[in-house]
Image 1 (cartoon, rainbow, N blue to C red):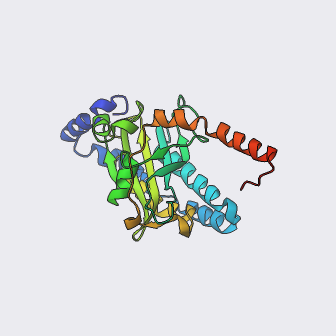
Image 2: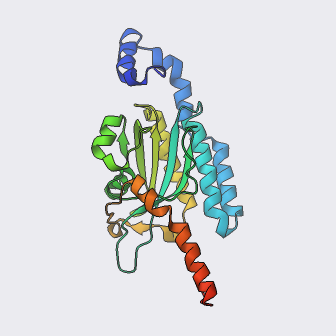
Image 3: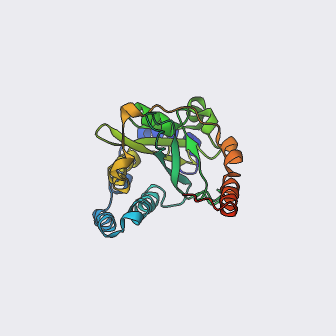
Length: 252
């Protein structure tokens, strides 16, 4: 099945037809473990949450959780990308119009480093759709991804899932995960991601959550166009700082 991912669904059906008990005997224990977060890990997260200084708490807890999620989702480094997209705080008396990727992890060896790059997502993205709808979005093949979200699709995304990060009716963003293989997100993996959604809320502060009625995502430019625009951002910031220094103007 791993060697022929394009035929995974058809081969699975044929194997079950020929050997009805095959998957239950070979993968039963393995899949049970896949869908669970190890109990000691909860203690590690809670310890990091309580012991980290407030200014470092978000980054510490988030990094710890994403590292563990990555190790369970892709232990053989087949190619998984995990992104946390947080709500961009709105202008006063306006609604939230976009999400911003603030955390990124990848097991794709050829992928360029993205940890220090910014990207914005909106209603045109799977992460934005899941947040606006208030429920997960699951795409198990590239054709469906391209059909639904053509402007935010990359060539390495063969299957993808997005889960809104919600407490009651208040949301902070989305967890967006892609794989280089189609039909990758089996039910045990989906169950596992659900568990991590409940855990990852600890990496957000109370003020990071917004009523769902306050979220009205707009359309963001394609990622290549964003990169072209944002690549000059740091240069503009430095120019402003130098000019303020020369004119003895105080900047926050």
